[in-house]
Image (cartoon, rainbow, N blue to C red; front, side, top):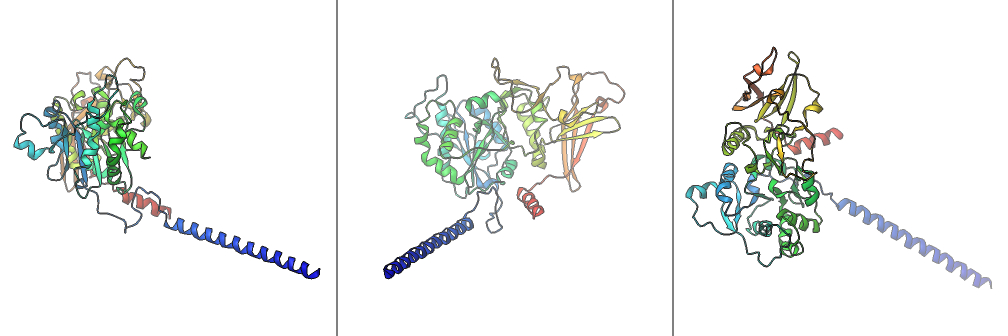
Length: 446
């Protein structure tokens, strides 16, 4: 009997020892696996984590453009593209439904992107009542641009024929992101109602948007099968957005892209540009020329004169105060200077003046914008004195830009800024390197 009890105790001790050993082995294995996973996992950073990962700086040669147009609009709007396109450095295509009847001139061949003919889209359904079937063709510009099979590509950038890009600022903006990861970069509309209808997470095509190389390659593989599920959508950008959503990729917002869903005098928007590089403008046909007494083309050329000297600073708003005359001075560099005849609190200066007209009328949300606004006084004499860019020069000492007064027949008084005829602004070239700034703050945190 004692032998049986002893054996029973021995077996119980053995079972307990085995249980302890197995449990310990499982715990050790779990800890080792966890450590390995943590060690090997890399977070999806928006910048390069070390000098070993760093690529050579992104340039415009790493970008391929897909520009959507049609035979009706291209003859006029190609003059917009001609201003910003750099034939010796840029790659891409303008996509039309068919080759233009008249052969393009030799000058066009050397100053514009080549023309590509879009593929047949008759097999795709389009059921949006009152919409345009061409939305399918324009959406497939994404697929057809990737299919050009250019080498050494980091980004694909898409826009309309009236999307006016500022290439240096586009490169600067995209350089903030790791092109090896999946990125969909752009901006929404300025109008709340437009975003409510088409989606707050959608990059509006007229503003232009960018897709990183690996994401674009994957999107191209599934794009045709994807858009077959969305015959009910209105536009091309809605189809791109929906297919990217299916891939689990959301929009990365960059405020330098501008849809410009407004009409008429866009002075208020341009003069209150945020402190970010100006990447694009849109709807140039719906805007008044941005400089007085010029055509739209001449006005954009004039703005580019400033951008060529200091592209990163263009339109950036700076506000300063004059103690002697108690003036408030708002500088939208390379475009205009406004002088208020009294001191105004900075939060009251920054809102956008509603100089423009609504994109659509009759809708209660048509006048609701995604930014703060203030009145653009109907009486020019009650507005600040405005000085528009006249000339710009650069030397080793810095950059000098001269702004001349926009004439208004207003009564002058002692200390009035309207007595001024011109304002000279002196600056140094702005060259902010995102990765350097980021490294600086990381070092400060150590």
